[in-house]
Image (tube, rainbow, N blue to C red; front, side, top):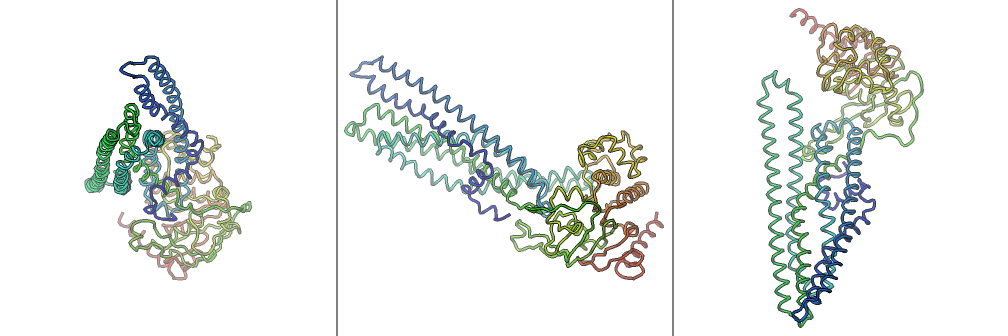
Length: 605
């Protein structure tokens, strides 16, 4: 993000919100004018009351014609004002919903365009809270708080102008007595804003922990650790409750402030008005009308004390939403992209360095750094159609290198070229059509196998999906499923084994028909039959394509045309499997250790 969220004042946040939600600006001036017209009835009635007293009551007699005439004027004004106010409310409601709709869509799209590093920094629950909880807070604000600000704000402005026209001295006294309320409210607002920010953070923390607790329930039960995580989540929920109690306590202090200052202001106006008397030309009707106007002026202040709480909550939520929108998308697209050449594509890594960017969190502010280089001066050319395995110990940088080839991130220095074109110059839609990533843990959406295959190409027919399965020689696997392509996979593919999820991911990749395949091999152990099917499917999928396998099992490396060995982010060996084993270097030591471990496992079993 370009600047820390804590430096944004409420005014800054509101200004940025209006810029991010242009629907709020459209026709806002007319909406305000209609609201001011709607406030007219609440102003005209005290004036009509004054006229009724001064002109309708003369020498102890009631002039019925004058009172009736004034009453008819009041009815007409109320009718017009009601129509104007209703129109203003409708316009504000429509514009706010349009703005929130646009904000939700933009926020959702922006989150999916963030870099992998940003997704690692923000846990899933926190991002979900931005799209749901924080935007819902804004919706609730516009439903009542924003409406009150519009109607009551315009009422205060119009009433203040009429009070000055009535008697400027009484008006000034009323304003001066009520003025300290604004100072006190501002101080309380500052504490309320801080408390709301903390409460929203605790809420996101709780949602994230609950998401992990529910998602990992099976693992927790297997290890008997449910109580430990439940206690940790309960502690987080307690911190959230305490933070919201603090918000409520500060907010509860606001309402009595408004009531006290309302009483003081009205008392001051009546005392001064009686003291000045008729000598100042203040008639009995004018005095009564001015008192009513004073109440009209103070009514919104009392309601503002309730609105302020919701306003600060909305500002805190909007600040967090803007924080996500302010996070630069990554990697960005070129303004003038180049098309990838047709046919097979080669991959060229030119002096590639990479370091994950510094985090935007409290840990980074305390001086912690995560910008230590992960890759150093990696240079390699992978000809079109070659099948390459990336191997190395955990933390060697092989997964990061695969991400750079897939352009899930950009190198800190150096270039990655695909078909001779720098990836930074390739349009995203063109890249995703020609290069497909099969991650280590493929994500399957709740639905059928067919659903999870078809989203790669929505135009694909059931026949084409079945042909894709057969093309990878997986017909026997599909025939063994309860309902074939219509088999339900469950949330995140939970009803399939890890190996079967990999099979679905390979078929999904084949439907795209990419020129380049990046496969982050699953580390999960699979049964022997599934491993044979995976190897068979991968061999068919890779045939004729440039493939880069991030190998966690050296049996994959042994089948590859070429092996790239990484050690602490550096490319230390490059060659065919047999040649590297004979060379007796780092790869030979890894392979010997793997063979020994495999033999020991077989002996034990």
